[in-house]
Length: 172
Image (cartoon, rainbow, N blue to C red; front, side, top):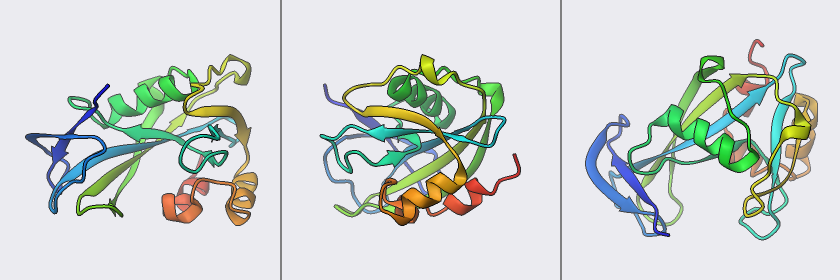
């Protein structure tokens, strides 16, 4: 099934144009990606492990993905958590954390990456993994996440998550 993204301007506003996922974007074209961090009352982060057959297979990660045509940042965050790990997030427990930009490595487009932080308790036994994307999930301490980054076991570490230290040290 073909997926379409809204083409955005540098400020994240929809331009009225669309882009087919998998094709190269042009200079000055932006699309939205979200990164969703879920933290419990113990200060642990809910992370999932990527399916072995996809890009960066078996690496740990925060939940996230691309916004499809018509979806905004929060809608995408809620949708990705439900799709990847079966968690229904309460929008009232989420807060926008920050935004950064990442140029595409193939093509001239740019990703606008919105980071969301949700303070929510989730029963780990109720997790429903999407087998095409994830193969495991767990609550991890910030120390465990740092260890995974140091050993190359977390999705591209500071390259994928340049804000990682800020999120790990956020006042919970």
